[in-house]
Image 1 (cartoon, rainbow, N blue to C red):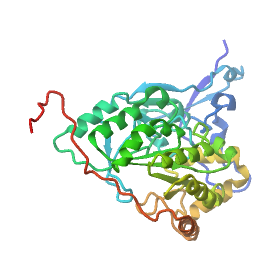
Image 2 (tube, one colour; image 1 turned 90 degrees about the horizontal axis):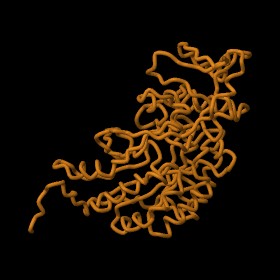
Image 3 (cartoon, rainbow, N blue to C red; image 1 turned 120 degrees about the horizontal axis):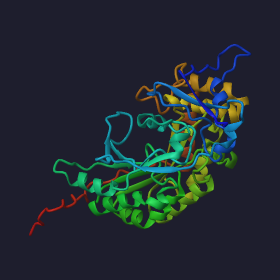
Image 4 (cartoon, rainbow, N blue to C red; image 1 turned 45 degrees about the horizontal axis):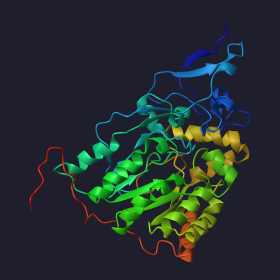
Length: 386
């Protein structure tokens, strides 16, 4: 009987772009998943996470049985976490708490800095991240309990800072809508980041919250190039759909922001001004940008993708990345990790600022209020007469 064998080996070192001519800069491409099995996905491979003792790679034993392997399909399991609000004390981001209704993201953005979190589950940050998802269907109930806790003090909750709350499976599970219903009842402020036009489904709730200064929504627009978007973000909404979502939000009175994120040198950095212009005409009032981040496994996944799709730009892209990261592929230092350092990073920042100034963006930064917050009543709690 023919079958595909599973071969265990230690993780091979990743060859840097400065290897001598003739060396294979991508040994991991030899274990890339066959194209038909990963059609519509972002990652090229499915290497084991960094906490695993072995890396398992499928290889053909001579009987061509790899052709019998099925394509990767999206599966959804349950996240049984007992709390839903995640805390952080990072000094360079504007929130100290967030909610992630889902773990993993079907959008499949190859550059996603959340990919390494799948390694904590014993799964691959590669194709597993975009196909083996976990949902938190009881997130609204858990949130209500946490908001009702005696010591809880309200501050803006960020949603979508790790995985997208409006990824395709939200159409079925509607966890994000349930969370918004809880936040609306409690009068709690929320900031949302998404790449999905599905956010417009909840305009009814968002509009009511906006009237009380409780919400703002940021749409991430990485490129206006349809081919690049489909290759880099295969299951996210198309760029025109995202711009249309900004327009609908703005027309409904919901504060809309555009995020040019991530900015990738020599790939989409030339589009900064055009993206800002399109978003401003759609109704966005604020804008921000983030430089490409390549922590942990994301670096190798992005290299594989870049070599597979834009091999002629590979060395140039990584040379510029290193110029903006102190000679490294990534620098996680607070204060510079989002924007980078050096002349190229300065130029990108200045171009962004000039474009925003010309378009009237960021003239006023909206600050959400906590004045309407009312703790939810806990089960069994007696209502007050006064």
